[in-house]
Amino acid sequence: MLKKITIFSILIMIIFSSISAAAVELDDFDKKLLVRIFKDVDSEDVEYMARLGLDSKDISLILYYYSNSDKKLDQGDLERLVRNRERINEFHYYYGMPSIIFDDELVRFRHPYRERHFPPLDTKKYDKKYEFNGGTEIIKVRGNNYDYKYNNQRTGVEEKIEIKNQKYEYYYRDRNMIEKLEVHHANQKYSYYYKNLNTGQTIKKEGRGRRVTKDIVYEELRERYNDLEEDDDWDDDGGDWDNDDWADEDPDDDNGVDIQFDIKIDLSDLFN
Image (cartoon, rainbow, N blue to C red; front, top):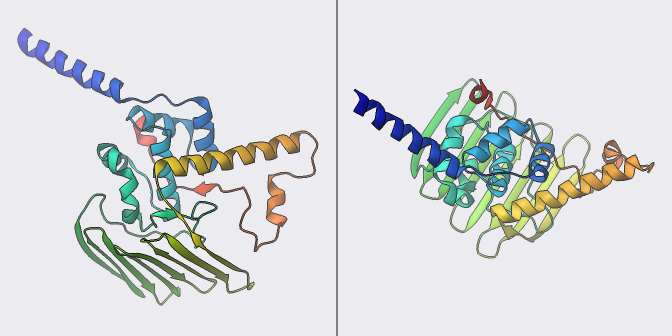
């Protein structure tokens, strides 16, 4: 009996020592950056991810993908990401995201939030069709190829994502807007189009992007965070601008610094 207890104690010590060895210490700057940029993320969420071995750059890329794809980050996904930490840069297609950022900023989709299904992380073959009142949702994965189609005749929403070796294509339309993005992987050239069907507001962007990596995403977020902090300092010093004033700028100007991302994150059960 004593021998069994000793063996069990040693195993527990090994497990805890491996967890401690994997843990990452985030500095206060990175905590503040991540909590401010990503809505619905707090210090406990970020600290928990660091304890699993994810550094600030890993966390930046993960939250960027989840916020832009409207996918809820839960414990199961997080554990799979930790197990595949060295491949995080390759996981864009599981979220239907392009593998580049624009030449001047991070990609930000403008379509409204909608619950949708996603393929399991790291799957190489997946076929799923969901039927509902008014339409269908279809997901197909073959290796690194990804096809997604959603059509709801009742609400007027149509969404398509196609990722192949040479090209990424995104299309969204509802009764209020149209949004399109096309990326050629060979030269990383992109074209983006958005139109508000109610106001006529139109945004067009073309250029040569940069490949998404956790280093590039982190540096972009760091730069934008510093801009937000400078805004706050300007307002505190008696300047005429505050964060709300950016909403009064030209709606066709897409270079405002307030880039907070919505993310649905539910790790609350981990802290009980």
